[in-house]
Figure: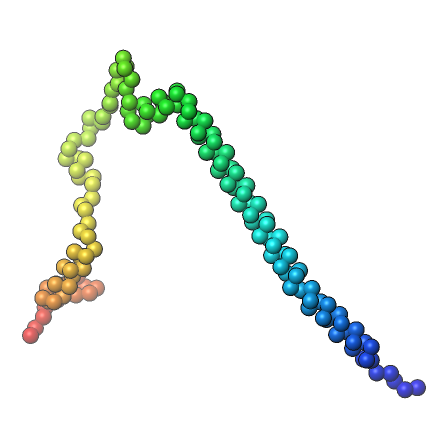
Length: 139
């Protein structure tokens, strides 16, 4: 008996048709998945915005409360109502010399530091890189 070929014409046509169907469905399925992912991201963003809106609504209701306004004015602005005695307590241990010593010296602006470096390099009075020694220029 003669051996039949494994790939017949009909099988080849069916394989081509199945591949064509798979290729034609690949793009729409990929777009569908991308759109579902986009919808999920938008829903998460919507939930976050809704949470922020609820917080802002709570703050708006709180701001309308007159007791909250008075308490905040006293805490933040050191407001003293009429008929009240208010005191400001300072630390007596801090003298003027101590307060000034704790603050670091202000740094000069970057362009002033750059210009000083350029003039020092030009005149030869700058420091040698890495050693900290003055560089002498012989002419």
